[in-house]
Image 1 (spheres, helix red, strand yellow):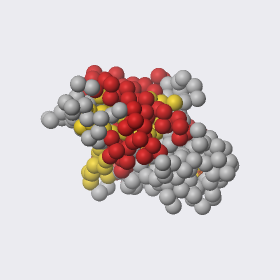
Image 2: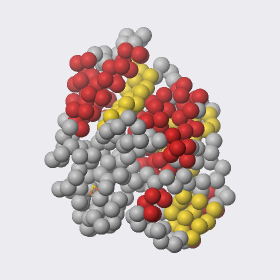
Image 3: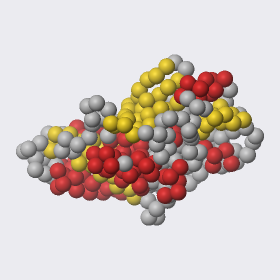
Image 4: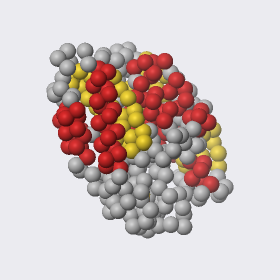
Length: 331
Ligand code: SF4
């Protein structure tokens, strides 16, 4: 690991000022991903600005029923929060499906959103990788890519985003609050992570020096049911081969009043399934209607040599989760 300077920030303003004053600085919170990448030489920040002790560690109900989750709330605390378990079970389930108990105890809400792909070529500085070193090529495209993207990939990068939590947040229409040199702004989670396009080195739309301060969940409840399901190579401590987060509400006549569906493990960002949602809205969620809707979305999949299995896997997960929610939501 290369030597680096360390600064502990006491306020958000102090953190962003320290970051701005030190080119190449990185924010450090739980460090569960960043420190690993530093050990591998993938990340080489000159300064770590420690934001882990900022007063951003609370979950607060806002007037109107939204929930504001501070950026340093630990994943295990968020998963266990009574309001999250009651109103947003999809989020609690997604958090508990991620990593290990030990990691969830230290990993933060903001850090979870910013974790980097686990593509093995990205993590190995001896291999070509456009994300780690733009212009060097994509080792995975003609190499080992069983775990890689089937939706939204580009000739420059076929990586997937590893977060479970972010997939649930995409299905919940959550927003990310940011504080940076240009002031404060909010970005929908669905627009926070990028597709790789020509610039796979940029995972998100975050601007230089910006710090995630919170994630806001819109009011939950109101007859909505939700669930997260994840397929992986082993029962715990493994990233999603494919996952599904879904939120569903039915009208009194049994037709779909609200549906939100997002896939994980299939793309460079949580993949919000807008086509499937449009196909289901206003219909009775029969098995045939659900199957048709899911097919409408996954018709855009472009599997690579060794990951075509992800399409039927995601299809079956989505059909099962949506049909289960429809049964649970029926009046
Ligand atoms: Fe790098 Fe992306 Fe290719 Fe993996 S898929 S080697 S992260 S460019």
